Length: 320
Image 1: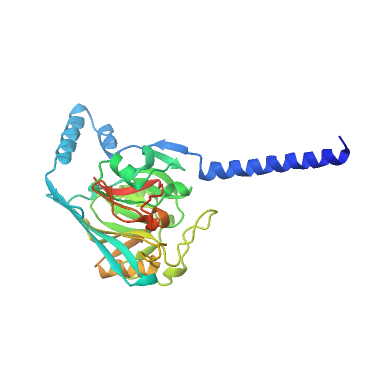
Image 2 (image 1 turned 180 degrees about the vertical axis):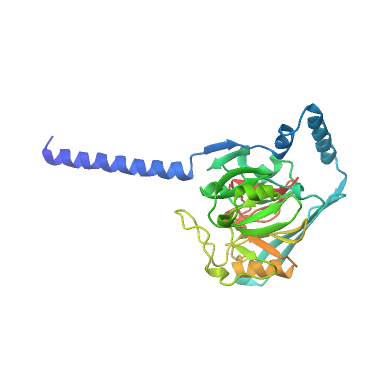
């Protein structure tokens, strides 16, 4: 073989190795599952911290009572002695300016009735399932997608009273055991203090779109993440958000988008205006785009991207 051919083959081999390594790094970052922790349920935590089998038996009895709760329901409503859920489909505009979104008004009697669940019951990166699958696996009445914590490696992640990640990075959302909710700066309060104060779930996405009844300025220039692979949250987009009117009275909104003739999506400011118009005092933007999903009583309520097809996500917020 001539010296020239050897150089060509050597260069080609080196190129293939470099490309292969880059592809591996990308797959490792965005495709290969990395399990960091098994999920610890709130009921397991309570039982483990108690003494003797009596507490365990009492917990089982409580779960049985909750699962057999009497209720009435139809395609968009659920009412029992402990919770009520009412969902409405709203359509505004015409033609290319049409917007379709779904509003769920949820009233609970206990803050811990609003729970979190993770895909495949595992905590880590690139672990995903459809919102509807996670919901069904956890006997959810109602669910929305969460913050897709598995796409990033930072943020404060507390789920059902258990701390899974403690890398403060942005404006987060804290939901308390007493059914209250507030926006907070992850870098200015410790996770230990959050737990001590009664925080049950945290979400790390954003931005906050309503604080004490006021819409923050310059919402439409906010960026949450700038890491590779992340899509801009600006402009008209499909969105998922959670707001609160008073303790244990929540509002969940999923706006569809990127679908001509069905729904173009909403801007962050428009999203905030919807929450404010419904009487919310606080509201927070969750993961959106193809992840935006609302589930109720075994069915997908919204129409993700106008294709009736869900995108895998790492977590949900739900009513059991």
